[in-house]
Image 1 (tube, rainbow, N blue to C red):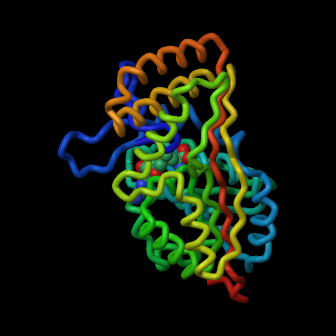
Image 2 (cartoon, rainbow, N blue to C red; image 1 turned 120 degrees about the horizontal axis):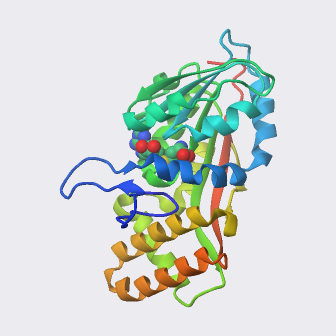
Image 3 (spheres, protein in one colour; image 1 turned 60 degrees about the horizontal axis):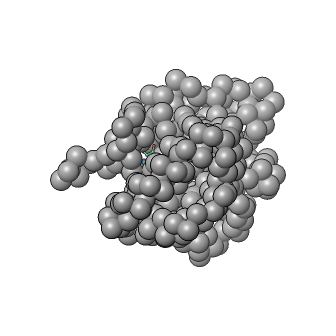
Length: 301
Ligand SMILES: C[S@@+](CC[C@H](N)C(=O)[O-])C[C@H]1O[C@@H](n2cnc3c(N)ncnc32)[C@H](O)[C@@H]1O
């Protein structure tokens, strides 16, 4: 499944390899989809959260290998490619994902240098980030995630917040879907598709558009100061390939949720794709970035 879009079984290359029917395997993400969205993600990320983060990191006691950053659900590693060159000082990134195929991409294209030219190193860890313990984050300077929270459950986000609180480290959790999209020009079916898509995101107890609110409460309950900033994708003619793929996923998820929409949604999608190809469509997909700063403990654990 694709946060911000949805499952796609389209005629072209798949955006996501869907679960086999009856399989307990979690859904997997196609690296092509993650690569397609990387530029829009980079433009969307909330720069206003960086200064408070830099100040907190600068106040940590020095560590021999530099800051240790755990990127949860790293996919192909776009968070590190964006953030590492924006932070000063040596960094060691621990890239977590349950998909070894994506971890391979992340390791190969990992960032090499910090903002001040210091060395950046990486290691990969395969596993389920929804079960992280404080021990797994022992010694962490920072936890990051990007486009992850909305595919977790409330319990999993509580576990994550508890692990960060236990490790005493800040968390920068970016690009969670906010459940709002704006398409220009508007269409009468926009709202119905959006509502069905949001319902699809909330299936099986997943948080979908509630992720940031739940995460903010979970971190605040554990004594953290929480800051939230908008991080919308603003997609115009220059992002037509991403917009088209997002549209297919967005409409596809809506129809999976409400099959009775199928005939109208098919006509809607065809018209939207044509407008996109003609450069006549603008889409804003709202996301939120969250920074949680734990209460300083007086010593870095
Ligand atoms: C939408 S992708 C985002 C990838 C990357 N952070 C980015 O922004 O491009 C979500 C990623 O989280 C991983 N993921 C989702 N749930 C996970 C879990 N419970 N444990 C480990 N990885 C998980 C998926 O394999 C996928 O790589």
